[in-house]
Each structure stands twice: as structure tokens, then as C-alpha cells.
Length: 461
Image (cartoon, rainbow, N blue to C red; front, top):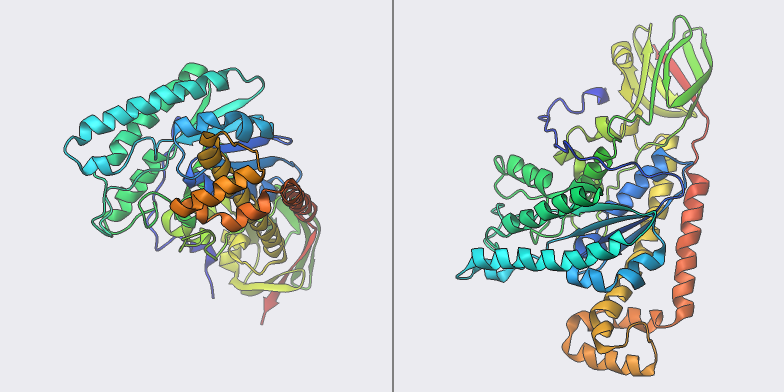
């Protein structure tokens, strides 16, 4: 028999600090642009954040966009603000940079300190250009994000740019100062993720939350990033639902974020109708994305309190003796002792409940949307990191195609996007893909509304 309420017994408790970091929650109608480099471009943290809002606030429709481009520095980001970011009409912009700004190979050279400081100053200069543009926006929230770290302490191999993250943290420091000076919001991924690395590396020197290249977090790392963002927004501790009933007296003791009705105890069989205001947060068990090997669900190995913090659908029943089966819409969830039910069980731990399966539909639709959006990011890379410097931004005529064909002969990154460019050069294709994403978002907000569930608690003889 499962004791799901003690999931964390074998795990040590590690609380990730986001003290003094606050980001206002998103609200209905918000249009959020997540601006960054390849960690944003090919990553899931933004889609995981949106998935939380899709499931926990199903009636607050909003829109979020991946505005990352692989390899980008602050200088690159500045050049594409108008065409790639502002054109999406966001009223919230999150901005992260620093991984590419801080450089790479020279940290293993003769003057690493001089190099690192020069890159920090270079980043500051180009950030100032961005800042001027952002300060000119009206009715737009700005959230600066300190980059996820470069892991230069894990010992899974010897290919390390020594002390690179030290200089990334200097970039984070001036981002923090800039946010304060402009009365903008700020969130740091670097410090808490570095803290996680150091904590777990004491037990396993090869551990990293930053992926196989020390740079790009896997899906579990992106879920950590989403967790940190949601925690800064005050979402930790917001229950999917919190139910507590007294079966003997047929009374509802607590019904947080849900409605309980028609509570009955008929010859020891307890039944009631349950309408939650949220869906459980679904955790994908499949690794998605190029080169990814870990699933989103593996976040619970890194943040042991994740389910308690983010995905808590607690059912507690008082006044029982013996063992009971709990069913949702005639689907058997599990068999529990009266003591377990009295303490409370977290239904979000069970993937086969009707409400969790409903949430999985939302997750699948959101993942499909992410996959289409990723193609637009590869197209954006071609436009801003290849065509822009040739004076052919968004030209898409036969001359541009000829330049592309020549470029792919010597640039493997260009060549790798040949099939995509052959399709997306046509505006009709881009329009159709945009319409498909819009349709997916509409479908998500059609299927994400919680439904009334019939709960049955039956004694086992």
C-alpha cells in the first residue's frame, strides 16, 4: 500500500533560496516575451511557466512567446528588439543574457582574469543600448533575469572553462543594479542553481543541473528554472485543491480552491461532488528537445519539495476506521488506511486520475505548440544572425535564396536549416504555422476547464 503523503521521507530537504526576489504574477490578457539566447531558444522554462498558468489559472487566458536565439549576446539582442520582440506587442518582457557575453575558451588562456573583466564590461556597454530602448516603452513590465550558470565545478569530464561563472555572476550583479535603478523586476537563476550544483556535488562530484555541455540545462533543469520563477511570483504553496471532510458527521471542514457538494455517508460509503478551480500540474516523463536526456518529471529529484510546493491536490477524510478505496469518476485511485486519509493524500501524485489526464491533454497541446514555435526560432536565427549582416533581413527573394545557398557551403549552422528555410521563406507557410499555434492555444483554453468529479470512498472488507 502506498504512503503517498510521505513521498519525501527518504529525501533530504533542500530549500532553494529566492529571498528578496519578487516578480509580480501574470494576469489575464498578458502578452509575455521571454528574450534570451539558446537556453531560452531551445529550452522549456517559459513553456513550463505557461503550462502552470494554463492548469492553475484555467480561466485567465494569456499569451507567452519564446524570443530566444541560439548564440545571442546582448549586442545581438539589441539588433533584433524591434523586429523580433517589440513586433509581438508584449506588455511583459523578460530579458536574460550573459552566457555568450562572458566568452569561453580564453578562460583557459594566459590572462583569464583580464579577459573575463573585459567581457563583463563589453556586456555592460551593449546592455546599455538595450536599456535605452526598454526605457522608452510605455505600459510594459521589464523583468531582468540573471542567467542560469555555467557549471565549472562538476567533474563529469575535464572540459571546463575555468571560473567562467564567476564573470557571469558579475554580469548578473550589474543586471540586478540596473533593475533597481529603473524600478524593474529582477530574478536570479544563477545563484540558486549554482547552490543546487554545489549541494548535490558533495554527494556526487559528476552531478550537474546545467546539462551535458555545462551550459544548457536539460528538461529537469528548465523545470527548476520555471520553479524559481513561479516561486518568485508567489506561487509556491498555492494548492490545486485542499479538501478535508468529516465522514462521520458529513461535514466539509475545508474546501480550498474547490467546491464540495452533495456529501453523503451511505452505510459507510462516502460520496461527494468535487469541482476544483485548478488542474494538477502535469510532469512530462519524456525528454523533449534536441540533445535532451532528462524528463521534466525528474525535477523532484532536485527539488524534493516540488510536489508539496507546486502540485498539491490534498484529500483528507476524518472519522474513518480500517481501509478504503478512493475512486474519482469510478476510476480507482488507490487503497488507503484511515490514518493515511486522515493525514491527507496528494492526488496529484497519481497520473491516472481523470483530472490529471485532463491536464496531460493540456501538456501535450502545449508541447506541440512549443515544437512549432521552435521552428520560428530557427527561422529567426537565419534572419538575424545570417541575413541581417548581409543587408537581407526579411527579404526572402531569389537573391536572398542564392546567398543562403552559398552560405550553407561554409556555415554548417546555415546548412542545418536548409529544409526549414525552403518552407518558411514563403509568407503563406509562416501564416499557416502561426494560425496552427493560435488554434492550439485556443484548444488548450477549451479543454483546460476543471470538471465536476464524483468522489467515492468505499470501505474494504
